[in-house]
Image 1: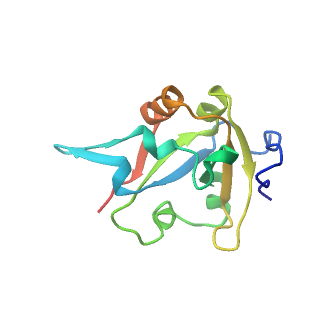
Image 2: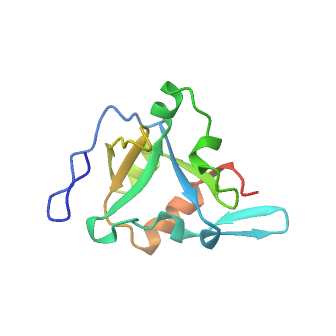
Length: 135
């Protein structure tokens, strides 16, 4: 369960292995198309929806696989959104902690806790891989 605004973030969950993809939906404001290439902006990695809690929502690839869902399902029918992935190791290498935080509307939900200043977000963006392009 996610922590409240005044609580400390949880310890990193070791059951989320380093190679686990952390999927993130990317709204149109956080990607741009240059020629035939889609470029993710660092804003896609801001702590959202609660920046004061230093939490970024993700969908955990290992749970998605266990649920026999494809990555298209992460987009949630929002065709102008794309889906990108970084690995848990990329997040941990940037001093982030990962928590499994399933929700009724997203059983594969997770949270990535930690400060995400511009440099860290740019590193995430440089490591991100597109898995579903915006339509």
